[in-house]
Amino acid sequence: MRVFLTGASSGIGEALARHYAAAGARLGLAARRQDRLSVLAAALPGEHACYPLDVADAAALTAAAADFIARCGCPDIVIANAGISVGTVADQADDLPAFRRVLETNVLGMAQTFQPFIAAMKARGSGRLVGIASVAGIRGLPGAGAYSASKAATIAYLEALRVELRGSGIKVVTIAPGYIATPMTAANRYPMPFMLAAGEAARRFARAIERGTSYTVIPWQMGIVAKLMRLLPNPLFDALFARAGRKPRGLDL
Image 1: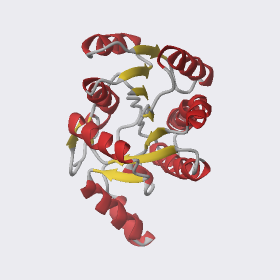
Image 2: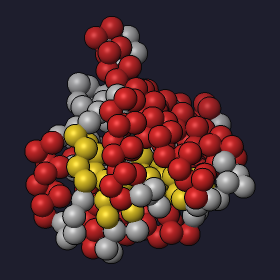
Image 3: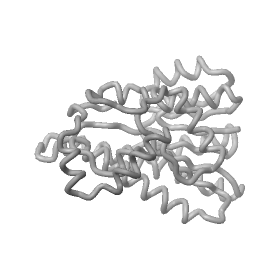
């Protein structure tokens, strides 16, 4: 099995790398932090390719994809996991660059991760394109406007891509995690129900990817919460979430 994975140096990405390496997969590991990538690759069984890059850089992703295909062949699974979460406030001009950075990484970065692999997957007639979204994309959360907007966009993008690739043999899998114990959630100062350890989350993600599930919320309990959130009328949603905890501003994890 061949797996190309972004955001591999920590959190969910690192857990997925460890899971697939333990299963005998050959990995392409992409992340911004070269030092952490090298440490991770050295700790994994097997030989793996490391690509220190920023997913906002389309040319770097194209070069990494070409190198991985040349070395290992067309991947069976491409997981667009790289993402950042930054607390933002709408009336703060200083937060606009952070807003842009979140959208470039979480939305454009996902599209730029998939694009260089699609032609090869189509030619082979199989593959999995996996996008890591979030339950934060179900409704707009105060103090997380950039993050919620980016994850709502990824959910819509992945749905469009799934229909676009129908009949090609490529399955598009959307995973919307709830709270996973990672450096990203460690910064939150509010209750996080149904928290999953990263290793357990990776195992559940891998099962959904193997099945080719079109859309799933993990853990399932957050799926129920997400459905209830969708059903809340705006006045009730507004009243409830106006008092919700907010991610501190200025974090880039």
